[in-house]
Structures are given as structure tokens and as C-alpha cells.
Image 1 (cartoon, helix red, strand yellow):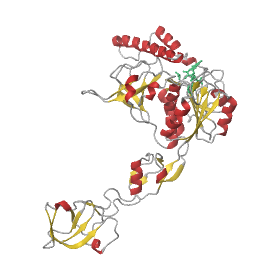
Image 2 (cartoon, rainbow, N blue to C red; image 1 turned 120 degrees about the horizontal axis):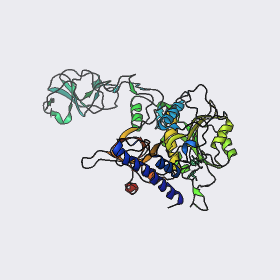
Image 3 (cartoon, rainbow, N blue to C red; image 1 turned 180 degrees about the horizontal axis):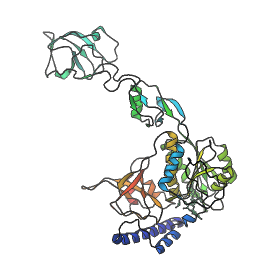
Image 4 (cartoon, rainbow, N blue to C red; image 1 turned 90 degrees about the vertical axis):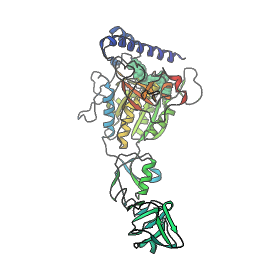
Amino acid sequence: MTGDDAEELAVEQALALVGGRNQARDRADGPMRGRADDQARGRADDRTGDQAGDQMPHNQNPGEPADPHPTPYATPSPPAPALPWDRARTVAARAGRSGPLAVVRLPLDRALGHVLAEPLAALTDLPSFDTSAMDGWAVAGPGPWTYEEGVSLLAGVAESPAAARLPDGTAVRIATGARTPADTTAVIRSEHAHVDEARGLLSTRRPLVTGQDIRPRGQECRSGDQLVPAGTVVTPAVLGLAAAAGYDALPAVSRPRVDVLVLGDELLAAGLPHDGLIRDALGPMLGPWLRALGAEVSGPRRLGDDSEALREALTSSDADVIITTGGTASGPVDHVHPVLAALGAELLVDGVAVRPGHPMLLARLSPDGPHLVGLPGNPLAAVSGLLTLAEPLLAGLAGRPAQDAYRALVHADVPGHPHDTRLVPVVHRAGRAGGRDHVAPLRYNGPAMLRGIAAADGLAVVPAGGVRSGTEVEILDLPWAPATPWTEGCFT
Ligand SMILES: Nc1nc2c(c(=O)[nH]1)N[C@H]1C(S)=C(S)[C@@H](COP(=O)(O)OP(=O)(O)OC[C@H]3O[C@@H](n4cnc5c(N)ncnc54)[C@H](O)[C@@H]3O)O[C@H]1N2
Ligand code: MOO
């Protein structure tokens, strides 16, 4: 175990202590959200690297983009408290929706995963003609029916005289998908038909219902009907529907372009950690994660702790969103705030009351310029920032709604931070033996750890003070498949 890990576990224990005390008191007094006793809170704050979070030298936190007098960096003012977690998500979502959507027409084979910029209106009736649903016989009027030997109506075969009309008392062989002749009463499936070849007569073994096994023109939609609304993500099924409805290309919202800038002189791009240097865990993680959120991602670019390189990268970027990692706090080489200040950026969110990840920030470099999401360097804190700020921002820019947190039962007591929201990696589990489906919190959820989140399929949003086993918490899903078999090793 590294020193960091030991420290994180100490943090967990301190948090658990606070939670435990709360629980003990709350069992007598009521809900777990109650104030932790001062002594416990003080100690937890020291150990959690809560680092007296409220005293962190934040710049001001001007609030929402809609604010008519946004406060630029340069204006001195007292530090503002960190934004509540759900409010930060709302601000980020609003920032993403603040401009017009960039719309492109994409051929079907390039549209997968994009968001529809307009409703998908049918360009044709579906089906576009009355169609046989079965292989068998098209018949007109009551039976038995005469038929012409050797004549068949096939799918996709251009009009034949036999398809034109079907006089009463006659039948014609027909294949699934073929156009039914005008005046067809019904289709008889081949297995329900009796053919008397000697007499040249067809009869049915089942009662005949008018219209049976005919798909009438327009059964699924009429030309112009809205098939799916704007904002729908183009899935393989939507591609199929669009093709069926006559589309060769789709009006789609351009994917937001994201530059990823990884800060930190201590980071290695390959090999084993050595001499105080560590592997960059965020560069390899963020690109695929952001792509899963619908972005087009370049990089990562590793800039070290070089304020001039950061400034140059920010001013030369033509991306819609720049994501930085590390350098958000107030250490000697934490350059994000000073560089944003020098550029006159507008801070939309400067610190969020969430653990891990509280130094995360959202800024706009200029009124028409890119947004910047500053993710803290601790890897799980970066994930927290990704889901709190980047996900709703990108959803807005891509024209889709931000992920809705939903509620699920949690299967264990989850200690809370004394006054901030906690995001805790969880895995969904099916209820066994009549039990209900629930989520189980995972261990190794310290700010510097990725072991828990790597086994998770969601993050539980744990309110200040924690929650007891059996209560409901909000869940944010991670954009990939359920947990792997070795998840068990991470359970608390
Ligand atoms: N005086 C205070 N110090 C700190 C506070 C605070 O409130 N007051 N908050 C702490 C918290 S919480 C966090 S989170 C970090 C955020 O710091 P930065 O965003 O400036 O990140 P760094 O200092 O650059 O790095 C923090 C930590 O993470 C490691 N790291 C950075 N990048 C990566 C990467 N790409 N892959 C893996 N690990 C990475 C880095 O080596 C550090 O260990 O600030 C605290 N300090
Ligand atoms: O706890 Mo920090 O907030 O690791 O991100």
C-alpha cells in the first residue's frame, strides 16, 4: 500500500467514524443528516484533506451564465462558498445550452451516436404499399378460389398484370413482402391453404378474416409523421428506422470538440512509477470516457506544470471545450486559476461542495470562446468533475438532456461527508431470494483511487451526513457495461 493509499484509507476511516457517530446518535435522534459533533467534524476535516474546504482560497463564484454581470477573475472579492453539487450540474447544463447548436448533415454510416437536430419525420408511408405479411395466397371475395398455375407475386418485383387487381373468386400465390393486388380480401398462409390441383381450386383450412396477414399501407406511419423527436441519440435501431423511412443522411448536432490537457511534471506516459514520478492515469481514461459522452476528443496533451504552455494551449485551441486535469488547487505549480485570471476568463463554477473533487471549476475563456472544465488532479476527483460539470455541459452542447440521476436502494450504510455531497462508486446487484434490486457501495473510493470506480457501474450521490442501508440514493450511471466478475473483491 502506498503512503497515499494509507492516507486515503485513514480518510475513509475518519469519514466512517463521523458516519458511525451520526448513526449512533441518529438511531436515538432521527435522520442521519444531523450535525456531526464538533470534535468529530474537526478531526474528520483535518484528516480528509477536506483541507478546511470552505477556507480554500477560491476565487469568487459568480453563479450562472445568465448572470447579467458576470464577475471576471480580476475583480477582488471575498471567496465564495463552493456551489452545491446539484446546482453546479444545473449551471454546467445551462452553459452547454447557452449557444445555438451546430448542425451537420451526416450520411447514415457516419451518424451513429450523434444527436438528431430535427425530429425524424417519415419521408414515406410505412409500409409504402399494402404488403403481404406471409408466404401464401392473396384471395379476393369468398372461397373457394380459382388460381392461375405458375403465377407468383414476389417481393420487389415490379408491377405485374397479376398484381394490378384480383377479381372476386380468384387467388394468386404471394410471397412475404410482395405488394398485394388491389381488391385483395386477405392473405392465406401456405400452411393454412388447401390446393386441389385436379380441380384448380384453393380453399382455406381456417376461417377467413378480412385483412388477415395484410400490412396495410401506412400501418406504421404516414409520410410526415414524427417518428422520433429531435434530441434522440442515433442508435443502430434509429439508423434502421431512418433508412426504412427514406433517409440517406440525417440532420445531426456536431459532436462537441474537446481538447484534453494533462498538467503535472510528475506524470509519466509509460512504464513503472519511479523516483516520485507516477503514471498519468487521466490521459488514457478521459479520451474514451469523453467519447462515450458523445464528444470528439483530441489529445491528451501533457503540458507539465508550465503556465506559459498552458496559456498557449488555451489561447490556440479551436475546441468547444477544453478539459484540464490537475493544477486546480493553490499549490506553487497549480497554474489553472492564475492563467484563467490572466486571460480574463469568466468563472461559472469555482469549487463544488462535493467529495471528492471539490476544487473542480467551469469557466468560459471569452464570451464566444470555449468552455473550460478544470478537473482536479486526484483521479477519482477528476471523475467526479467529469460527471458533475463535463457531462451536463457536453450534453447541452450536443443537444441532448443531461443524464437524469435516478434513485435506487443502497445495500449498506454509506458514511457521508459532514457538510458536502459525496460521490461513491457503486455496482448494481439483482435482488436474490425475493430481495429487491439494489446498489452496493465499493471500497477503494478515496480521491486518489480508481480501483473502486473501475469495478463500478454507477456513482451514488450521498448527501451530507450519509445514508443508512435500505434507503434510496440518487445514482448516476457510468456509460458502460455492468461490473466484471472480480467486482466482489472491492465490496465493503
Ligand atoms: N491547500 C489545499 N490543498 C489542496 C486542497 C485544498 O483544498 N487546499 N484540495 C486538495 C484536493 S481535495 C485535491 S482534489 C487536489 C486538487 O489538486 P490539483 O487539481 O491542483 O491537482 P494536483 O495538485 O496537480 O494533483 C493532485 C494529486 O493528483 C495527482 N495527479 C495529478 N494528475 C494526475 C494524473 N493525470 N494521473 C494520476 N494522478 C494525477 C498528483 O500527482 C497529486 O497527487 O488538491 C488538494 N490540495
Ligand atoms: O477530495 Mo479532492 O476534493 O480529492 O478532489
